[in-house]
Length: 166
Length: 130
Length: 146
Image (cartoon, rainbow over all chains, first blue to last red):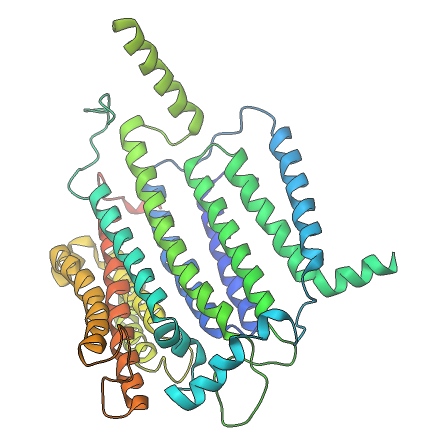
């Protein structure tokens, strides 16, 4: 539906609903922090930014000028290769998969004794992996600076000096 | 055939994720509208998050918030990685949308083929005048 | 959209509660789901709702863009400063154990400061991005164009 619909307003609304549904999916997979963030970011901020961008550009997408056979074939091939690649993964929910063995039990037990806060995800994010969070805050800061540099101070002047594209 | 069915039952989240991933990539590759490409990229990102979170789930586990009782907790490490990834994803989406708005200001449209046609016309003008 | 009465009354009631919830999520992120990012996004969403209903000029009166820019930097500097405080008091960079007398309280203080920095940065960045997008408009959209 998102792929074939050409009215961009409805596409944005559908993708916002998709974000909300994926947030519900995250809750059933026990990822409550992630679901919170995905619902707030995907169904909230992202939709507002898309709608603001849509108000500044067009509303309807042009129909595709050529038949999309090659992308379809490439995507079918890619999907089958990826599905073939997932066959080696451990079954869904298995408790002794390798990913659960090495660091995660240390984090869970260490949070109880050395840090003393109940939310393990916050403890790992802010204390065990605090340096990653530092870099991530830097990424957010850079994105803000980038958007300000791109959009601030130059009002849209249609075709005024659009020939010198530099 | 039974083997295939067993494989499907134990791996169905991963298959669904792969289908979503290829759908997102298909939107990016085959559609010419810039905003729709960015929406496809978002779809791709959400499917990758689902892959990681589904790898972190333990059957019979619960959310990784310590209560007093000893129970099985789902692996908190993918949650942390995906939290970072979600926030980085919205950063790149915001920059992508800002770029699309600026392209719209400069070229007057956000369809890829119209932009390419204008660029080619400019190139031919430059080649003729130089 | 100022003359839509229901929107105005609803927004006037909702915005303080959303901000309060954002602060709750920020400071209770240690005990339940939540933390810096979620709180920052929620706080920015409350202010964006204010801008959507009452107009961008009102929002620029409440949160002027140059102060929002300074807040972006201050949030990240709080995070970096906590790291340097850990290094200055004898541990490594971003070591929270040395911040207070015993390691567990040091961890609590460190996590509190770090999440505060993250929350401030995320909220101000989301707000600044919205302000840039909305200020790029050529004209105010009339109501029948929605």
